[in-house]
Amino acid sequence: MKKILFSIIFVVTATTFFACNNGDYNANATSAANGSVNPLDVLDSTGFNWTGTDAVSAYVNGNFVHVDSTNAFFAFTGGANVITAFYGISRGFQLHLEDVYSNNIYPMGYSVTNRYVSFSDSIASGPITYFSYYGNVGQVQILRNDPTRIVGRFHFQGLDKINGTVINVSKGWFSLHK
Image (cartoon, rainbow, N blue to C red; front, side, top):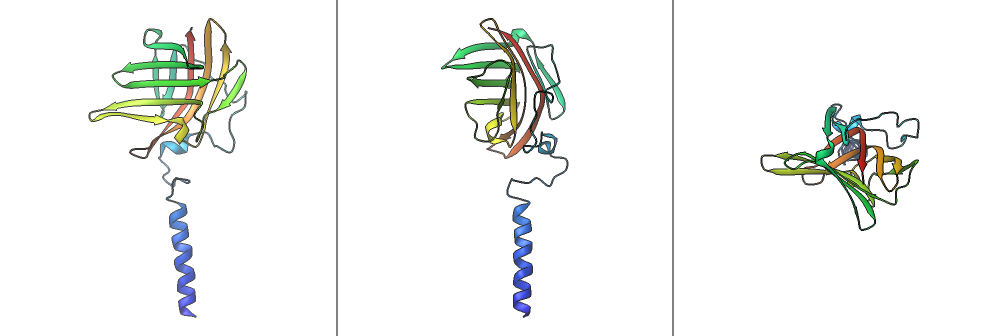
């Protein structure tokens, strides 16, 4: 009887440990992942209620990052709207948006590779890039996409697969001439 009881306790303990450490659940209260939008309760059109004034801006882990129009570029490449916005050496955003039309919200989360955002952050040993398609949640709302301008809002949770670090990007904004 003791062996059965100890076996049950071991299985419950091991299951609890692995459930909290396999990447699906982050028990660290200060992690950037906990500042992201809940993937089970994503934003609707009323949830996207912020604006911006720069060409590209967002909050990365709570820190405001903005890129003016002289350092942000639009290109239409391979059927995709591509926005590149850098504010330092190897620091900035790249948005790859295929098949996006005005007044629509599109997912940009885990395994969504036709619409994604990456954020690169430079460090002494080289840039670290966080991708929305590795994170649990992300969305982009296109406000305007016509021959002269593309305007939208975004948010995402990004993951660097090399180091396993997570960032939260919130209240993202872009407004660029084509």
